[in-house]
Length: 475
Image 1 (cartoon, rainbow, N blue to C red):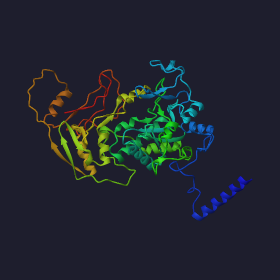
Image 2 (cartoon, one colour):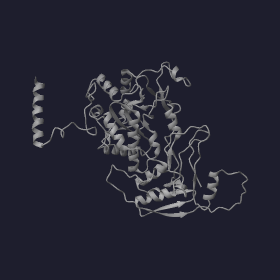
Image 3 (cartoon, rainbow, N blue to C red):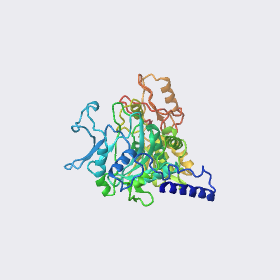
Image 4 (cartoon, rainbow, N blue to C red):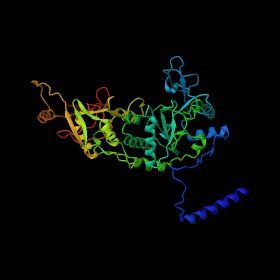
């Protein structure tokens, strides 16, 4: 009776406040996913004083993953090395086939052991049917927290609730997005990719290798495989040292009550994920990059210098200190290309472990230089102009020594056109065509060849005889 009376009083109070604030029922709907919300799935709201069974059930529901397998952490005290292996009945045997391994299931007892610190487990997020309950982005290195915070900022701009965890090392970070139901891994990864692209435009110093640190790591579950794993958070020994815990974004210190924080964390519905992923857009690389991509999640616009110092020799060297974050990120994407091997293996449901999604054709020097392929000079000029800068080019190319050659081979029509058109050019690009009997690889189409060539790649990349993608040569 007391509860019903309190409910009646609160409803009357809500009605009075709506009238006082002149709010319509539509304006007073529950908060969106970027704001606080209550965990409505069983066992409901928990906190650090909740029974252990309730905390284990909550942890298993929020960090839902494959239940037919999990990983365990091992550390070799003699060598100082460690890693992860799937938990197998009878112990791990190197070289055993996947179908011959008797994996141990992920149970409530295993989750309880993890939270107590008896075993540090890893979770496999990619479910049968190519779906997942959450998306995690892994950031490593001395600047990991800066990169992760830019990822969080990008998420806020798209109304994506992102939870930030300090990884086991105490230096890296994991950024988590949770869903109210299993969603297609492709959509979740598309959202993560878009957030990473925005974070790169905010930071300017992030590398494209971050695209390979999303979990799930693939859109499709490999045939006969279990996907990639990520370390589960809230491991007791690490938690006691301030690691594997979630941070308060205002203070960047751990939440005192981790379970209460996670219980109030917003989760995205499948419809909200679809809208956010579509808004995040597609990542453009290589010849797809024609315009400057500045960050849209901030009103701060660092001014570009009137001139950019460029040294032209074997490559194009720019000074990263002179580049705005948006221009630096755009140039890195323009000097990269889709890796056809990654897409082909994913299409075939083969493992993409250790195969990068993008091939990078730029270099960063220890003294702050960004080296791009020489054939990108026109692209660099155009993007710099869009940023409000012009190039001050110091041409340090070697003139070389002229040589006379006699060719006795019979040239094809395409080769004759090249011989006719290329003399007099200061730079040009060639791209190999598919070999007989080789399939077309799923790479984006590019503009037709033009003269002089203004981009480093003028046709879709094709594999070489070794099966690796071949970047266009620059002359």
